[in-house]
Amino acid sequence: MRCSLGGLFAIYASFKTNIFKRVASISGSLWYPNFLEFIQDNNVNKNIEKIYFSPGNKEKNSRNLLLQTVEDTTKEIASIYQKNNIPTIYEENEGSHFQEAERRTAKRID
Image (tube, rainbow, N blue to C red; front, top):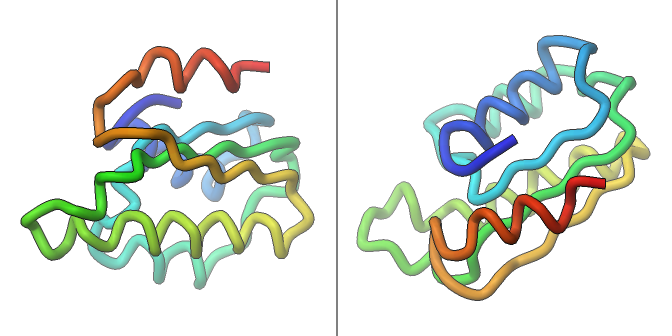
Protein backbone atom coordinates (compact mmCIF):
# COMPACT_ATOMS: atom_id res chain seq x y z
CA MET A 1 0.00 0.00 0.00
CA ARG A 2 1.25 3.49 -0.76
CA CYS A 3 1.26 6.16 -3.38
CA SER A 4 2.09 6.08 -7.03
CA LEU A 5 4.10 3.03 -8.06
CA GLY A 6 3.46 1.47 -4.65
CA GLY A 7 -0.27 1.73 -5.33
CA LEU A 8 0.26 0.13 -8.72
CA PHE A 9 2.29 -2.67 -7.13
CA ALA A 10 -0.36 -3.26 -4.46
CA ILE A 11 -2.99 -3.90 -7.12
CA TYR A 12 -0.63 -6.03 -9.21
CA ALA A 13 0.31 -8.09 -6.14
CA SER A 14 -3.35 -8.75 -5.41
CA PHE A 15 -3.45 -10.66 -8.69
CA LYS A 16 -0.11 -12.42 -8.37
CA THR A 17 -0.02 -13.61 -4.76
CA ASN A 18 -2.44 -14.69 -2.07
CA ILE A 19 -0.52 -13.32 0.93
CA PHE A 20 -2.39 -10.01 1.12
CA LYS A 21 -5.92 -9.78 2.45
CA ARG A 22 -6.38 -6.02 2.44
CA VAL A 23 -5.09 -3.72 -0.25
CA ALA A 24 -4.94 0.04 -0.66
CA SER A 25 -3.94 2.05 -3.68
CA ILE A 26 -3.47 5.70 -2.77
CA SER A 27 -3.07 7.68 -6.00
CA GLY A 28 -1.81 4.53 -7.64
CA SER A 29 -0.19 4.80 -11.06
CA LEU A 30 -3.01 2.75 -12.54
CA TRP A 31 -2.63 4.67 -15.79
CA TYR A 32 0.48 2.55 -16.46
CA PRO A 33 0.46 1.33 -20.09
CA ASN A 34 -1.45 -1.92 -20.56
CA PHE A 35 -2.18 -2.31 -16.84
CA LEU A 36 -5.96 -2.19 -17.27
CA GLU A 37 -5.65 -4.91 -19.90
CA PHE A 38 -3.60 -7.00 -17.45
CA ILE A 39 -6.37 -6.64 -14.85
CA GLN A 40 -9.06 -7.54 -17.37
CA ASP A 41 -7.15 -10.63 -18.57
CA ASN A 42 -6.36 -12.08 -15.14
CA ASN A 43 -8.27 -13.32 -12.12
CA VAL A 44 -8.33 -11.39 -8.90
CA ASN A 45 -7.15 -13.26 -5.83
CA LYS A 46 -10.12 -14.48 -3.82
CA ASN A 47 -8.24 -13.98 -0.51
CA ILE A 48 -8.73 -10.21 -0.73
CA GLU A 49 -11.11 -9.15 2.05
CA LYS A 50 -11.21 -5.46 1.28
CA ILE A 51 -9.69 -3.01 -1.18
CA TYR A 52 -9.42 0.78 -1.09
CA PHE A 53 -8.78 3.18 -3.94
CA SER A 54 -8.04 6.84 -3.25
CA PRO A 55 -7.14 9.09 -6.17
CA GLY A 56 -6.93 12.84 -5.77
CA ASN A 57 -9.74 14.62 -7.61
CA LYS A 58 -7.29 16.89 -9.47
CA GLU A 59 -5.03 14.15 -10.82
CA LYS A 60 -7.01 13.95 -14.05
CA ASN A 61 -6.06 17.58 -14.78
CA SER A 62 -2.46 16.70 -15.59
CA ARG A 63 -0.90 18.06 -18.77
CA ASN A 64 0.27 14.54 -19.53
CA LEU A 65 -2.40 12.74 -21.59
CA LEU A 66 -1.57 9.36 -20.09
CA LEU A 67 -1.89 10.65 -16.52
CA GLN A 68 -5.27 12.19 -17.38
CA THR A 69 -6.70 8.68 -17.59
CA VAL A 70 -5.99 7.83 -13.93
CA GLU A 71 -9.50 8.57 -12.62
CA ASP A 72 -11.34 6.56 -15.27
CA THR A 73 -8.86 3.69 -15.08
CA THR A 74 -9.04 3.57 -11.28
CA LYS A 75 -12.85 3.49 -11.41
CA GLU A 76 -12.75 0.69 -13.97
CA ILE A 77 -10.32 -1.39 -11.90
CA ALA A 78 -12.40 -0.80 -8.75
CA SER A 79 -15.47 -2.07 -10.61
CA ILE A 80 -13.63 -5.28 -11.48
CA TYR A 81 -13.09 -5.98 -7.78
CA GLN A 82 -16.74 -5.18 -7.08
CA LYS A 83 -17.85 -7.60 -9.79
CA ASN A 84 -15.79 -10.25 -7.99
CA ASN A 85 -17.75 -9.56 -4.78
CA ILE A 86 -14.78 -8.02 -3.00
CA PRO A 87 -15.72 -5.13 -0.68
CA THR A 88 -14.36 -2.11 -2.53
CA ILE A 89 -14.08 1.50 -1.46
CA TYR A 90 -13.47 4.12 -4.12
CA GLU A 91 -12.97 7.53 -2.55
CA GLU A 92 -11.78 10.62 -4.36
CA ASN A 93 -9.98 13.01 -2.10
CA GLU A 94 -9.43 16.73 -2.50
CA GLY A 95 -6.25 17.65 -4.27
CA SER A 96 -3.59 16.14 -6.39
CA HIS A 97 -1.34 13.12 -6.40
CA PHE A 98 0.65 13.58 -3.19
CA GLN A 99 -1.70 15.83 -1.23
CA GLU A 100 -2.30 14.46 2.28
CA ALA A 101 -1.05 11.00 1.32
CA GLU A 102 -0.31 10.04 4.94
CA ARG A 103 -3.80 10.98 6.12
CA ARG A 104 -5.42 9.16 3.21
CA THR A 105 -3.35 6.07 3.95
CA ALA A 106 -4.01 6.10 7.69
CA LYS A 107 -7.77 6.50 7.43
CA ARG A 108 -8.18 3.14 5.70
CA ILE A 109 -5.86 1.00 7.75
CA ASP A 110 -8.59 -0.99 9.46
